Structure formats: C-alpha cells, structure tokens
Image 1 (tube, helix red, strand yellow):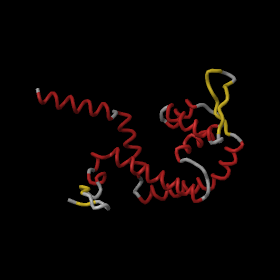
Image 2 (image 1 turned 120 degrees about the vertical axis):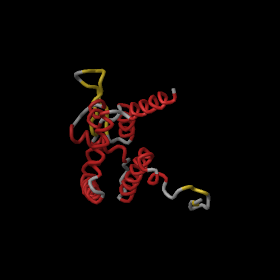
Image 3 (image 1 turned 135 degrees about the vertical axis):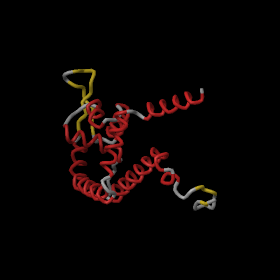
Image 4 (image 1 turned 45 degrees about the vertical axis):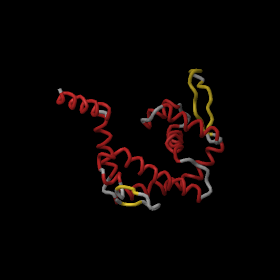
Length: 176
C-alpha cells in the first residue's frame, strides 16, 4: 500500500487520474480548484482584493452593461442562485449595486459602482494575461476546450441523471 506525505496508507498515488472517466467530476473539480487557487494567488500578489468566482458575473456586466441576475445566469448557463450569491458578495465589496428596474419594479438592475469601474480598469491588463495563459495552456494540452465542448454537448443530449437512471434500469431488468 502506498503512503501519503504523512505516512498514512493512501491507496493509489493519484485516485482521480487512475480512475479515468470514473472520477470525471472529481478531476474537473480538482482542475477548477487549481486554476482558481492560482488566480487567487496572482490577485493577492498584486494586492488586489478579488474573488475568482466574481469574474463571470463582472465580465458579463462589462460586456452587457447594466443587467439582471437572470440575464447573467442565462449568458453563463449557470443557476440564478449561483449568480445571486456572487452578486451579493460583489455588492458587499462595493463593486456593484442593485437598483430597481424602472420598467419592472420586480426586477433589479446590476450596475458597476465607481469602485467597480476603477477595479475593472486596474484588472483589465491582468485579465489579458490570464486569457493569454489560458490560450497557451489549451494549446499545450491539445485543445482541451474542444474536448470540454464535446463533453458539454454530450451532457446536453442526455444528462448524467438520465444516463445513470437508464443504466440502473438496465441492471434491474437483467436481474429480473
């Protein structure tokens, strides 16, 4: 049995890598954590208070101008709840504000504050470096973005839930 750095039995050296597709979710989470952690470190070294999870929301506000949580969620294809959590954090940090929509009082419009505008100006060159490095990594890894597109398309055709449900049903049918 292999041991980890603390001398405990740890099984295989790299569970996620060793299990291949069986650990797909774990592998994607690990890669996401590594990328986010390095991003957070870059911000910290530069003395910038910025949470990696803010980027998608802030970027949509830069691209769209004043917008709503629902519009951001639709553009990013993530949940309304996830966007709302990031927005609350951005508001608490003073980067955005939420105003009533003059056309529909039930909706809120998200707007960059002056502090948010200053942050975007400061971050733009840094984000350009992030984009260049991401493109370099994608090329080095053999166009992983194309593979992720294929995975995204496969899940759009049939969800994990449906695939697992069918597999379980098939196993149950064989047992009968």
